[in-house]
Image (cartoon, rainbow, N blue to C red):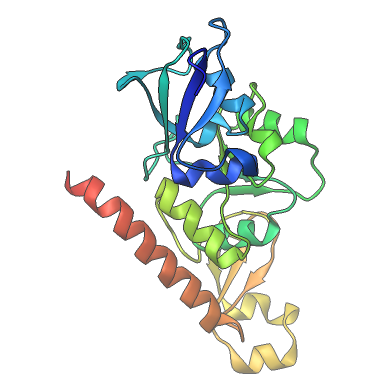
Length: 248
């Protein structure tokens, strides 16, 4: 190892952001004594949104710290559950995470989503509305103007939603939001919506709710068992990570 370089030891959970050649117990980076540690980390490919504690030669430092030649830097991952800069956590999702948005809304988490927003607009909305931007686009998380963001792990939306809930442990209110628009649901008498229902639905179901924002009508239909399983898994996940925090 060249003593004019930095010795970077990334936590294993951060390796996915690194080029293949740098994945392992230790990597190196040039040290120019002027770059901040945050700049060095992002230049390696790891967004600072995914970084927790930083240690230089065993001592905690901030991303603004300027490391010196030969320093050994430990870069740890985010400690879960993470506390965002605002509470309760609210989210805005990029255009590729529509299925995740519906699941977060299903369990009652305030989730903004549209499939026609560009990167700049997403960041502007996240900052203006104090939302965490959820994405699998690492470039977005490298944008300095972004106030709060997080990388979503997993490819299946049922796994993605558990990753987000485990990381942020937001309060849940299942069945309270419209999965289409994020509006709040309110119970509605069957007689008030009967004229909007198909004959089979009128004959089979008696419990309905309607979105206060878009007017969409909900009832426990054919997919209710699968949706209930998603809700149950979400509640177990948040209870597991938030319980110790509440007891302490």
